[in-house]
Image: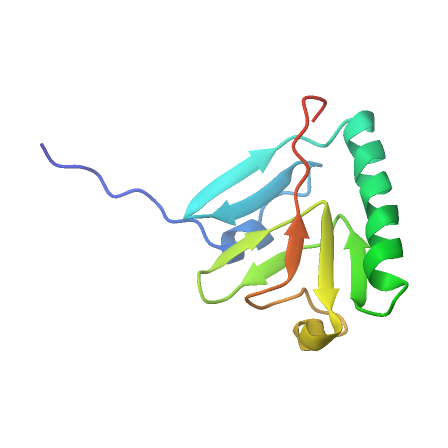
Length: 116
């Protein structure tokens, strides 16, 4: 039995997705769509951002930003929209003014909660 070829989704596909409040990501060639987070999810994400700020940003290790921010991984054509993103000073070159972070090793944080 022949298998039909399926579309491989890339970050470029995500960039043309509708701005409808959903989160679109290209992971492993698949298009992942999740609904907007609920209040409890955002509350936990905020608390984690505050903790990361204290642990990583205040001592001068890098920068933490909260969603929405797209992160592109050019080597794999994947892209995600993490809840939080940490970029160390050593990797600050992946951030360019007016552009999305690109590179192999930013540290994205995705929250998974029942309230999502």
